Amino acid sequence: MWHFFTSSPAAASARPSRPRIEDAVIAGVTLGGWFVFLSRGDRLEAADLSLLAASTLPLAGWRISPRGVFAASTVAAMGLAARGLGLWPPLGPAVALYLLTAGRDAASPWSRRDACTVLGLLAGYLALLVVSAGWVPTNLGHTVFGCAAAWFAGERSRLRRQQIADLHERAHRSAESAATDLRLAVAEERARIARDLHDSAGHALNVITVRAGAARLRGDPRRALAALADIETVARETVADIDQIVGSLRAVEVPPATVEAPVGLASADTLVARHRAAGLRVTMSREGNPGSLGRASDQAAYRVLQEALTNAARHGAGSAAVMISTDSDGCALTVTNPASESADVTAGGHGIVGMRERASLLGGTLTAGLRGGEFRVVLRLPRSGRAP
Image 1 (cartoon, rainbow, N blue to C red):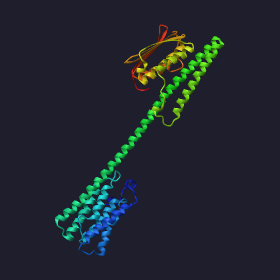
Image 2 (cartoon, rainbow, N blue to C red; image 1 turned 60 degrees about the horizontal axis):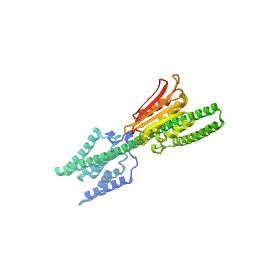
Image 3 (cartoon, one colour; image 1 turned 135 degrees about the vertical axis):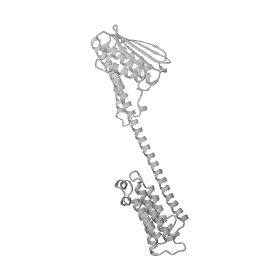
Image 4 (cartoon, rainbow, N blue to C red; image 1 turned 90 degrees about the horizontal axis):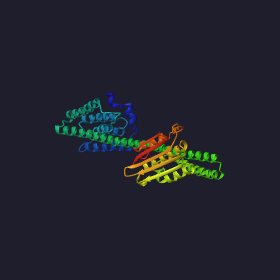
């Protein structure tokens, strides 16, 4: 019984300990309503008023101990019943039972001991009414029905509150999941930017190296000045690209749509012209319309072409042949250059690995190898694909 009157520490910490203004209003309305019903045709004595107040006013503190408030209200109502003052249902215990049921939570569940105590107190109240006032079964039925209705109403309110809490919890989890997905998307986009940065900077440095070496070996001041001008142009363009990419990486949030996409096969002529100016003899042929490719495939094909020509300039014999074919199925890119059997095109970098990764991410294939004194890179990509 003592467990019924005291709340557990977990329940006390989960429930507000301070009564609210509406709690005092509930107690006052219950007191006034019960007083009106009991005082009709009869004059209440001081003891009756005291018991009436003792059965209703504790409702103002139900948040502190709902079990204790129900017990105090019911015991005071039993005192009224012993004096022959009954009401169906007893307002004080009925309201206290509703608050007890509605205020339950996971930290203070309804137990068998609670049920036995509630039923015992209500049975004692009914027994005193029968003995002192001689109530008929109809009145007893009204009292039982009223208390049962209070319990069901409280349970309904509790379930409704629990549903609302569950909805808030699910919304909170959904928001956290969305934030996690956004962070993952940002991380993936930054990884893609880092790959583009590697490709752009690596290509530029290789072009600068080849142009500087060619100018030094030829010993022609006029060609040396042209090479220096090309080096300056490439360096400026690369610095601008790096500033843009690093600026994006420093942002707190980088929505994928805010990153400027790299160029595609439409810029292949410019890329080939730059390598020709650096001394690489490049021939290029095309079939089909590259504009029919999806953005992701177009960008990936350009990056593979860029890397293949860079490898040809570094490890080849001074020439390269490019074949670009596009149709309704996708794109086929072939880059060949003469190379010695001892040439190691994979030394010092991850170019071929990166090219294979780009192709795989888009559902394509890439083969690269040295055979018969010729190094060949063959790329096949579908027409559209997921952006790398």
